[in-house]
Figure 1 (cartoon, one colour):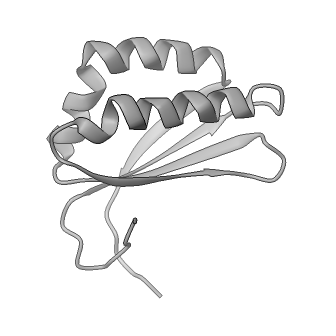
Figure 2 (cartoon, rainbow, N blue to C red):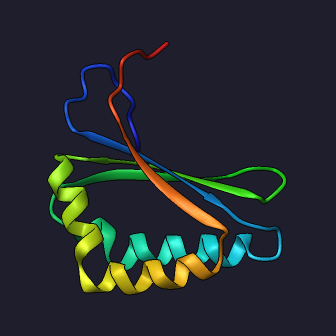
Length: 105
């Protein structure tokens, strides 16, 4: 289970995917498979949560990693490079952004 805490000292990554209702469920299936088969097994992975908006036009991925370098290494694996090429065909674009938790209310 994902826990958001101000004391978390790892790396938080929030990735947003812009998609269409026609591709949203296929994209979500690909993301789930990536987590089940590759991402969750990478060094430094802590947890993640996937979210889809009501209009099925955006998917948000919230993930936590022990270190920034762990996340970056996962992206460079051959498996994820290939998966991200396929994921890119199911969305207009996606952008991973690294964040620091500064407040929890």
